[in-house]
Length: 371
Image (tube, rainbow, N blue to C red; front, side):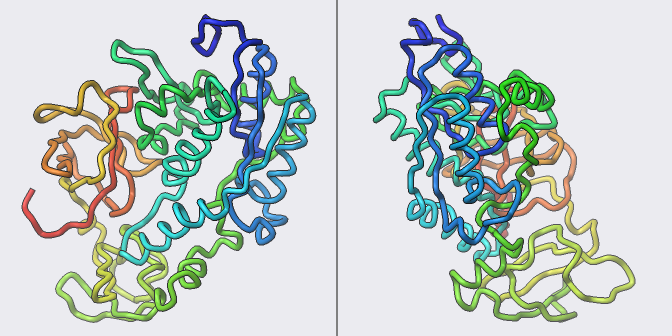
């Protein structure tokens, strides 16, 4: 078996590496090349990158396509740029706008992995005759008794398993994550060792298609009227202020309300039908029960037969919390062992058994039904 788990030599194993132009994916391509695999680098053009020229560290911008090509030249591998702009707009940017319009908070990186990268690009890799699609994600693919499993990366600070919860079992069988066993400092060291031109490139921090940092401008452009004003109300429904569009608010937000009050106020709920933003004290954010829909299950079998004790993450940067999940019709109920603040509809709730990702889904708005 070679290092990717195939019963043939690396030289006889073709792989496609998704190259964003950053240090992580570039190092993944370099490691595969060093090990003797036939490597094809592919970079996706996902949006009108002219708007992002000069924006440092932004995934998939024009500079990043140029950087990916320079890395491929340095490694002596084939490199292709695929124009997925229409697909990205339809499957990621349009969903981004609609989610905000629905009073929820989207995660475009998950949608991008779920659609453009792990469906469309993965299909292209198969067309190219590749045995695997390799990415620079910090996550681990571990062979278990029932097949490949998704696990957290060894580097907790860089772990990206939360963003990969929607990966299907079929996709996981084809994917490889060579950086999952190392930490970021080792990745940088490898990039220096390979003399990659992106070895010192800064981290990508922003949403790639939000060129000027104002996501609300994008949503308003795509959905005219999305920034229509409305009322800010307290927990009893009393009007205490005005806002300039529900798309500017997410559950747990403190800044931007513009209301003087004897105690800090936070966004407790966004009501898209009435265009109301409900504000209250921090304790009003605490919840210990909520619903999750569109479940992707990666654990054993087709899902837990009854209640299951797990840990969950309700935000990418949140610490795991002990919980019990109960699979109900078309959704899952999550009962936290301790109440958490700012559980935002539209975000992902990911289920873990220690380091293993069991699956996850999208946090739903409270519809008033008892849990």
